[in-house]
Image (cartoon, rainbow, N blue to C red; front, side, top):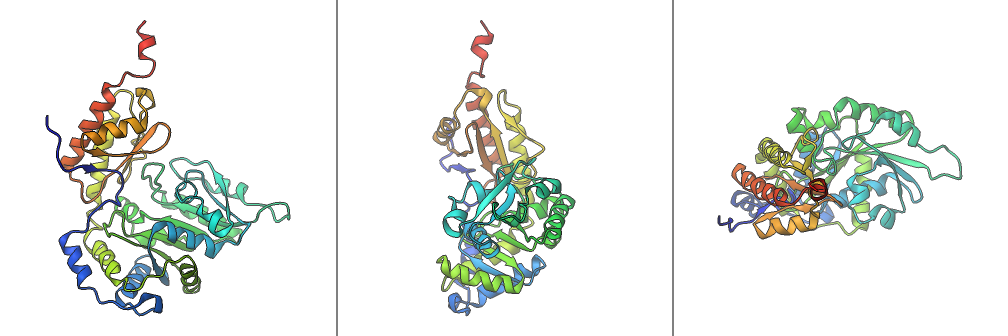
Length: 359
């Protein structure tokens, strides 16, 4: 059977292409010099996001990594430590930026689907002695990338935040995909973010904008982040063109995230039915599918290359796992086709131990 000429790109929800209507909104954007604070479309985006999350102010930055790293620098001094779950994006996938840029280290704690308990935070907070790095911040990620797009139960998030507050520590929420959490739970973004002192959110993932994230929090905090953005080289000039795309995505692509969640579940169930492929269906709560191929004997890199040759793009996601992410440029038919290709490749592989078992 012939494979489609257009690749089905499931590597990330960042691969989306701006459609004609979004491009028109970008072309029509009123702009100024945002480094001087004079871009009206950027200001509109920042005010809109701050209101949506129930905070005083927001700051538009080029990327999610920069949003996270600005937050690290604003909260923590060199030599201090951040308590977080051990597979958090800021720890694993930001090129060691916290230590390289801000001299900050991490206290990683084991989690369940990316979440952890308030009692674990209590234990992880360092005592006030000169021999230990001092805890500066408690950090959570919602939805959680490495855990397969899983969502923090809001009550649990609030309990963790309460522990941080009781110990005089700020609580930051990496909400790069908070929009997915909101749509999946039916809870407004402000309700999810209410317990956090500060939040980072992304516009170029599920909402389909080509560029941009925001740091969100109190006015004084964001004023300090403005200076750090300048230090990190993140100031942009006529960035209203990009902010217009983010505003368009917020208006037109938020509710449709439910389609991505349905498609991800469809793919996860297809893969879970393949012998030797393991999928945590309980963790597949939004638009990310993480599947483990250890029992097939296939190397994730090899499997990804075989899939790419047949027009399906996924990413190796560890020693035995791969990740697929659904988004607005992937249809239900695309997902079915991708599932068939991945299932066929994995299903052809001899299960680990099968040869010896048959002797």
